[in-house]
Image 1: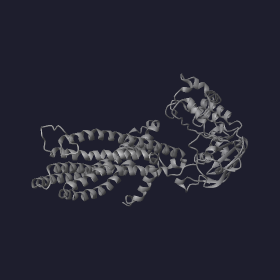
Image 2: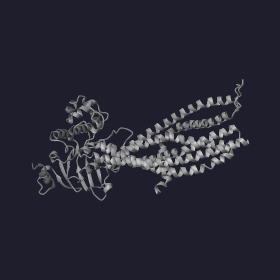
Image 3: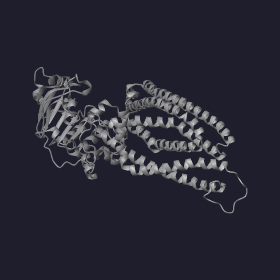
Image 4: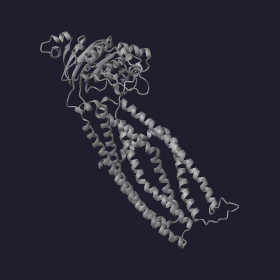
Length: 595
């Protein structure tokens, strides 16, 4: 309950969202002018219709119609003939201007959200599921779109209608108006109580929808594992649970909205019946005219309809506030200092000297486990340094630190003698290429995936990079060559083919520092040989950090480091470490080469 009693955070989140609306505030103001005009013409209709019904009709058409006299039936019809099309025109421009503002604002918001996500550190994605993040951008912005385009405008229009209707009904009959006023406090208090409760349910439904999207995405991304382990039943059961939760929460929200609307309509319709009865008596006693009575009735019906629509509109706005809170909260997370507005083109070069001094690290999610403990390492420009060790020893974490994915808990990293943090992160990464064990290609063609290493590369440069990566032959073997679509995450290519495309991407980037994270460990012997040849070409004349599982691929390394329990246990060449009695590297070698 305490979480629901915090109006200030709601205001702050809404205020931060208004930053995206501000550039289009002039258009929004124009839209509100048309909204006011639409509301006023809506109010004029019941007034004129009531006047029309209360006017004594004569079948004789007057020769001269006096426009200034509103008691003339033909004068009223002329006013109606003007107001009806005017209302249509005002409504058109209201819809168009609000749609323009909404779509422009959401375009900027979606772009800002995407920029924020791609600029977020890896630690952010360690804590958040991709499915939930994509749901935030898709579902929450859709909710905001509905509110900006229609709900908010309708909410304001109903306020104008209610205000104007109250003024007019008091003008026509204060006695009947007091009967109506007795109903308004009941409606207002009910709206506040129910609205707050419905907001809580709506926010819960949104969170559950995000969770279901996460289950859906993870199941489809890991569809091969799902089928290989015959877990269709369990994943369906898991997804069924999440969507049942959504349904249960949504139906609970619908139940209370329905009760509230039914309650409000019963009160309002009962009040209208009672008012009609009282109005007939006032007409008979001559306290009001027949025309005023009809006008009062029409305005009362409009007033009741407007108040009756308030709970649903209010609930939608509250739901949007919840969506805005979630989205703005995500966008308040810290980001990396990377370039997002212009392509990265570094105007400096680095040699590739790397030094780690007393570097320690642990992950935020498990701070009690020290992954790296006071690592000291020095790599000269052009050297190839291999890192080996058992799973979980900290090899890949070391690579992540060199890429700036994480910051050391203690100690320092130096590049070319300068502190890592003294460089612009985008500039520094532009000189580093990374080839992981599991290559994920982007949807598109092979050429587009290779060009990812250098977006402005020519076709000749792409082909030359593919040749150096031993990829040109298999690419030309496809009917569509370099324009072959790789499929989702590169599913149309084999593991070895994807690795060579990734290597061609790295060749095209021409980095000063190369990081290979077990790039051949998941390949068959033939693919490994082709990939290893491509890697040997890529590693020439550049600093290379090779994280390896297969020791056969690192025999030629200038230095081999054996990492054990977060520390460098051994260091030397392949020959030196192979001859070290009771050494970890020697034991690993004997295990792998005993056959």
